[in-house]
Length: 173
Length: 282
Image: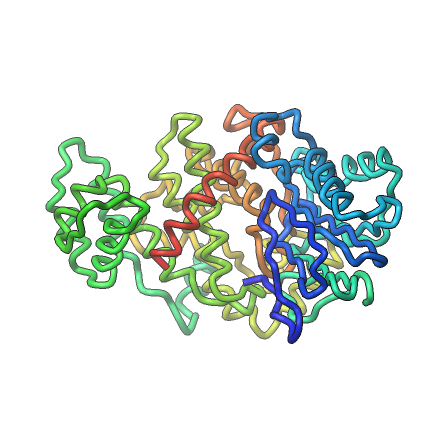
């Protein structure tokens, strides 16, 4: 499966699809499942070493508010709000958070009928702007499925592409 | 057609035919279905029998008492459920292995196939089409990949380069480099295995549903479910998203792109249910 090997010292925590996780445990590595056209959003505060990962499927919760109430992580608007809320509950200042984004793969579609990934990304950038935040580093779009992991001890953000064994570094420790 | 046949004849390894599936499909069409015929078919395959019993006795079906009688299991689960279980177990057998030619690890082609199958089935249920037929066609849509993977193993860097440089789909790159592509190879294989023409046609045209003639609806279900599975992260291997957008699939089913987010959410629900179920069958 497209998963990352357990590292020597850190414990791997898999964040479910349509879910999120925030923690201040420096021994944890938060890891998404394969993202497809969904977006993985990692936030990290290098000062407190608090970080979180969100794996959202769709841009806007207004399509199904009931679902959003049960599973805020499914949508970018409700998921991001909760990610930031949980981080702030751990005494993090929003302005200290570094934001990393991965996923949003795109099929070859001139008609734009199937551009879920693109729509997700454009909504995310708008939402972040509303919070006065911007993306520190990203690996978005393209033709390959990928997973993202955030090491809470070091702040390193790494990616693994489906079909490739080597990992890519989005942010060095 | 001859080129595809020649190609299949030359490959080193062909998976064993899932003979029971087309047989069960025939039974499924009968109005006065005799469950003893189903039991007889399943009982020829000991591993399959064991799986049906195991799943029937699992907590998922809320089994109060354990049974080791296949007839009772079939009665308890109902024929629809048994049919799907059998198809899924056969699918897991054929699609479970890694396919390095496509950059697919162990279980990835299987997981992709089951995601497409349950998504297509859910869509068919909503649009009142034959969900068993659609489940089977969708489950087997990529069967041709297990044939082509053997040839691609040595040339996959070329396939990746070709696809990226020319901005063409994986299917188009296969055709260019090997002379055949996985959809036609899979369809021809299913035809040899005596699957009905609607399944053969829909697998053949699952990347271009308009080409499937009378079976456009079936092909469109596979096409859209394949897209949705990719969006949800269940599309694996090298450049898995090198697929052409075909809005015709939406038109054929009377849908618009507005329906895609709804299907994504429901596919998510379906996958949560079957992940528990099929990990038993694997």
